[in-house]
Image 1 (cartoon, rainbow, N blue to C red):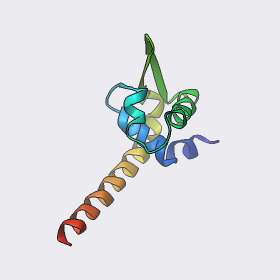
Image 2: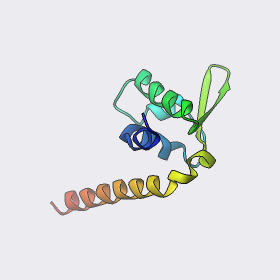
Image 3: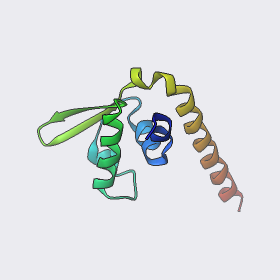
Image 4: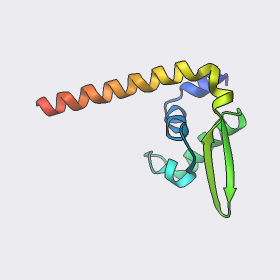
Length: 99
């Protein structure tokens, strides 16, 4: 899978957004999704294997953070996608409020 396809997969993109500004535990990341912990773990592994995510072990816990240096060439694309998603959410919220 090429890097663009890897990064544009919606769940991986959301994982990166969650860990862009700091570390989060695997459990905390998984809590944001409606898929199994194992599925989230597989997404994290793909991102880690590509060098886009770093992992730190602390006992039985794993903490993930975005490798912002490796992701630098893709930052404008990611931020545009994150912004687009936030805009859609805001629009839906406004429409629901008006109804």
